[in-house]
Image 1 (cartoon, rainbow, N blue to C red):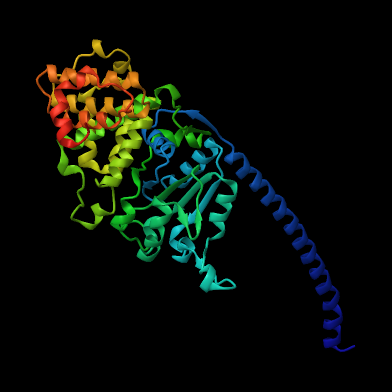
Image 2 (cartoon, rainbow, N blue to C red):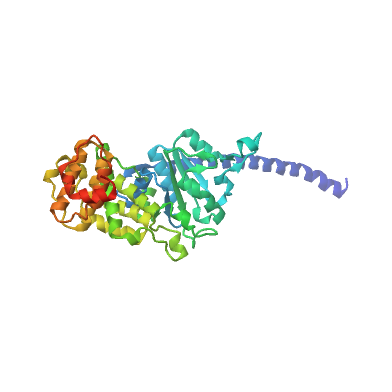
Length: 420
């Protein structure tokens, strides 16, 4: 046998042996890897298990307040700060299905709808078909829609979102009233291909600055995170809360008319919260829900500032702290025992609140009690403060009701205005 033949015959069994051993070792490695992956998955599963506890978090309370008022909310925060996790927790706490839509990777048609040509467009028109996420939310009838990465969405997508956020329309579909809308954004400086929000879109949101508390993070990683809960609204307090909120906002803007609308000069500020009639209506809703639920001052301040901006919001909160309006429903129950406030701004705000309370539950007794309250303004020598309230109250009169004595001081004014 030649040396070559000898080496060949000697090598073949060895090669086969190595191959079998490699196969065996490879098979063992695969099995071990599967076991290790399963064990790692078990670790991850256990780390996802956590509990929640009530916690004094102003930003969580402000978020819950805005969601309860059914206002679109925009959370501003750096990447990795926990915005998405907070929304998942909020949805779970409310028992609402969460529908996440990454705004930056969608086309305008995903929000405005895709045109679908039917059998006879000249008769039926061309409907705008909504995307699947909007259909799912509408089919459920409730839910929390989360638009993430909003500051990375280009201007065309932001424009398509205008009707979704304000009118709740997606193509030809209207989102049900119980559906809440929340968005999240990174500051343009830290966003991927970041854009400033367009002023029309920014003015449709309550803007909340989302920050982290190191102690909360430490406790959360230990297994306990704070819970976000919707404010508990007392149904009996709703009429008075609505009247107080109307009086407060109307009185403030009467004293500070320049704040009714103010578009900031720079692009960054226009992409945040600023005062407009739309955002003042948001502030009104926030105040009404806060009064009816007893929301804390810090959370209310954060939500109001998030609606109308820093300057106007801080002024309104300071005004509310000094205002201290009595409950208009209690005053209407016993108007003779009421003493008119001495300050002119408080007088105007309270009389506006009284008229709003009468309008909210209009009966002859409450209407006549309203005139007793307005007569106190005449006795105090400030009939001009009550003039607008008197015209509004007169317009509510049922023709079958007799003219009350308290109206005498306003007869000339009401005749000139055509209300009498």
